[in-house]
Image 1 (cartoon, helix red, strand yellow):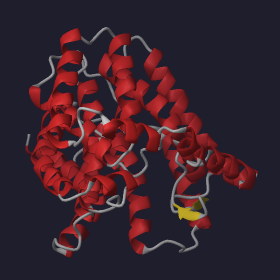
Image 2: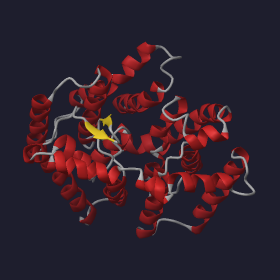
Image 3: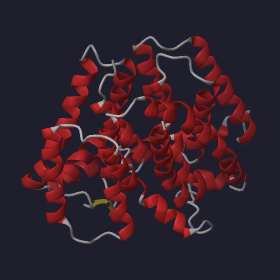
Length: 364
């Protein structure tokens, strides 16, 4: 039991890494160093307290990725960026190792601890939001500062509900989702819209949603909206949000489809098959980017076509397999669609959860 709690603690600490980064100027830098190495500490801990599961194909692909990464290493990133890239791949391996531990670890993390953590941090977000002007919100001048990095926590709100797909949802999970919606709207990150649509789509497919849950979500969302967002009566904020983030001009200037096409154009056949390496860079809107913004293509860019096909085929197999638990099916279905829209690359716990669901071993 102590081992389970240590694993949960390490997972929470690794989750806090991005959030802490937003306040690195006011918090002890030593804490950031500790959090940076948390994924590696967890990796060693998981190896120590369990036998390495046998998966020869994954081991072979991982070996290819490591060799490709060494060959492609050019030291073009800062130490922090390099550690970030390495940590993301370690998170994937951690999910694989966690799949051989009791499911209570992951279930407790996303059902209880992550929602409570999100609710505890929400007042910090509100305090910072209260000092942000309406114009700053629309111009996104507060992006990449302070509580913006909390989004790595609030991104997990749909996953919390999907893990509990066959259970009664707690008030903490429902409020956590509402806080997530509000947080994403403040930073004009449209991905929460796709996440909610995906969440409802999956709940409907598995017949796991009730009308009262939808009504509850709408009432609480409108209440929080009216409490904090100005100009409620005319819904000016929502109009501005749609015009700013969903207008034809905004979508046209997003450039993410061009990013993928440029990747195909510039990638040679060897890199395409075996990947450009864990620490590889590409250009996005004429700026250095450490990942493509489309998840499945980013897997090809970083780790190669072989790795991407392995993940995709295994995901589809687990989804259509009769014996796969509904909550695992729902998570994998969510990621299969989400990786078409975004990459989740810097939201490491999402990568851990995806890997966990991919390799989950049914418990008798």
